[in-house]
Length: 243
Image (tube, rainbow, N blue to C red; front, side, top):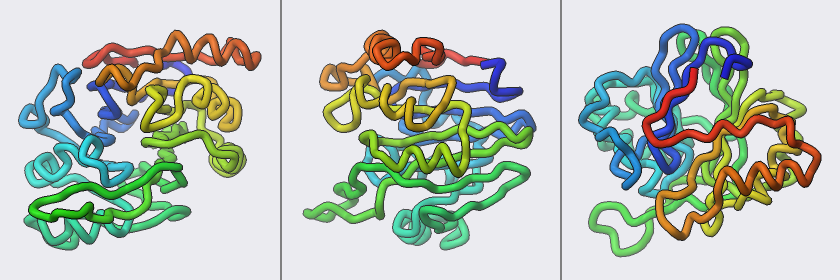
């Protein structure tokens, strides 16, 4: 992680990630602490400065409302998620700031740009007997206070325009799903790594359930097959922190 400045990363299983920035801000991504791999529960989260949810599936929205109600983070989200939670949070519409793909917001020296993801974004919510549409899925390019950029890809398949993310934002690190079935598998993630041009990958969305069968070892093998054996695969166990 030394190549990425003063940030630290903790993976809590599935796609639930905590990043502490060089300036000491606590960022949470897709905070489903209720996943079966997480060693931490949502009610133990006592600080969140920036909250990012990639899309409207329950295993990614997870504990966002509970955590946001208690910690009052800066919470930028795709427009439809902001509308949905803006009517359910104590602070009303100001609790969740809506924006969309291509937009960039800045909070306390951290820049957040929403980018494309190839997935879906509705779920069963409340008493509804049909899925509630919660906007398109997204990824986030984050530029930290020291200028380091990384991509949190959310749930996605590989897509050709990842090369545009490389051209426009040049992230050094990517959090990529590798489990397969609902997202790309290790072979797809290796191609995504090539298109993005990153030198480090943190695998997410794997091993939570048997159906998410892709592994970091398979990702390393697929990277090597593409001539990308120098890319670091930063394999974490749930609750482990890299600095």
